[in-house]
Image 1 (cartoon, one colour):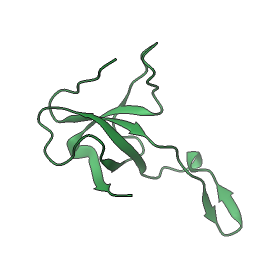
Image 2 (cartoon, one colour):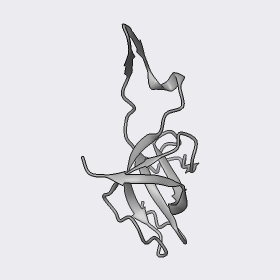
Image 3 (tube, rainbow, N blue to C red):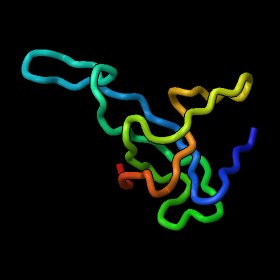
Amino acid sequence: MVVKPFGSRVFVELLPVAERKVGMIHLPDNHSEPSRVGVILACGPDVKRVKVGDRVMISYYSGTGVDYLGSGYHYDTHRFIEESELLGSYEA
């Protein structure tokens, strides 16, 4: 399945969330609302600042999840996000 976002949207695969350590207590990130990190899989025609393959940071609840039977995409790991909702990009 080929995904082609419209306008200034990007299609992002979210990377797994690591656990955080606070003192001697380990807190899995599913109990908080941190920013998330993902890799851009596709860009709409109006996207200017990022490209396919870039790693980006997004807010925990931003974007629209995709859950289409048989597509291999899951709501928790794949999202359409407006370029303006991206917090920033980085190089690993």
